[in-house]
Image: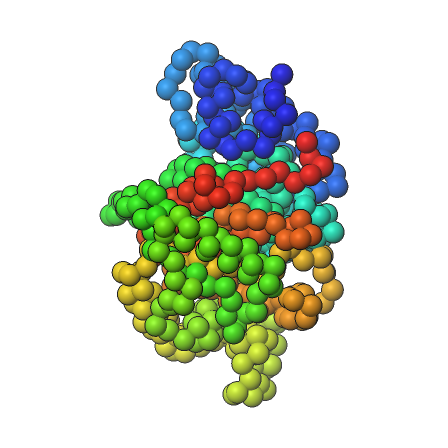
Length: 486
């Protein structure tokens, strides 16, 4: 009989238990399927199942264990995956009712690679419409709750992924991130997530129907209940597809430092572009104090030599340009007309978004040039500092709010209502210049909501940001299951 903590163990621990024959692959799969039957009706994190094929795969995995074969690192670990990944025989809708009938005929490349790493893929998890919210609800599958408080958002767009992990409904997960869509849900649900350096994990099969070009800024990557799992799944997913692989290979540097005291880190608690709730700031400050006591070199003032307001504007422009292809012809025409009526000095999020939705290529090239100049400023900063630690979002998880457009909504920060889109700043700080960002849990607010730290590193420093998360997991705080899911 499985131990009570089995559903909440890391994928690394689950794979180890399978190798040692403490639990079978079929037994573990059935454990998670039973938990989905029990807990998912209220949580609504898992929105599609492929139990028949999963059971066949688990049986085959058990036979390999019995024969004493060499086993891949995640052998037999049951896995769900974000709905936006293609999985043979399952729908890929991105929450859009117009795509309800779109059933994948082949696996996404990362799905193929994760299967090769040993996972038993058995279902999909919920997303917001077009992956465009820090909530996870849509007209096809409904609303996903946060397992720490069902009345609150689990984050987005990989909200179903993080909620399923936190509630112990799956062994490991994978999501996507252009606007903190891995990092935000990891923070809201108290799990781990890694946004890779742009361009090093092929997104083939994670796209709207018929599209194959990789979007600017957007990446795919893992979520898990432990940092070691992030490393294993990330390395399984990373690397070029067959076309690009004919000319280049990925070789990321190994972490040069193995102890907290060896790291030199900068800590950023807030920024004029996005106020951060004191409950979040206090937990980040407490972490900084711990790091100082652990003999790490910690600066609360060190920053790259750049204007964060400019950085944010560059990010919003490139972000909204990157997603502008999702507009219908009528939406595009309407946005063109609206943009023509905007005042030049209007730098509200709505104005910046609207202009960027219809940005001309010459203007895009100028903004992109500025992005690459900012990249060099980050590179100079990371010659002196190993990492930048900062918030993943402006607050802990907020109550569900599905009224109006996203840019019209607000969240509460220190008792004040502020635009929810302000916190795109904490998404862009890593995203716009291609930097990796890992989120690890670091504590709870007085209301018992989880808070994570965003660990930003130099371009291609993915294994270092994950390694730092491993050290925090071991020496500061590991994953804690939410109450009510035992």
